[in-house]
Image (tube, rainbow, N blue to C red; front, top):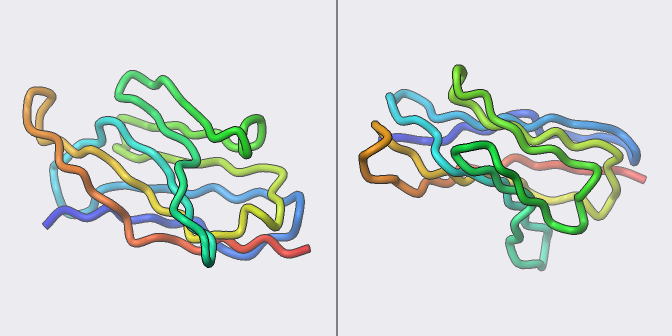
Length: 121
């Protein structure tokens, strides 16, 4: 069973930085289009940033200029570099990706287990 494994969350002070990573585990599936979402307590899950298979990116207005989504196709890994973190960025961050065995094959929509990011004042 294919899974997405996230890492890099933690506790950081306001203004600090974190980098999240996301990669499939135990499979030959490759990341196609993908994105990062977050969910704060009592709030709905929201899209933070997305990236296409060709590398085009999109960001929520609240993180533009501070967060950068990227991918390393050789490592089959997606990243979210988060700079100038604010307390309102505190949330569980989830990666979501379409995974394919081959460019022409079906894309499976998979979610990671989530990683906690806490920004202290």
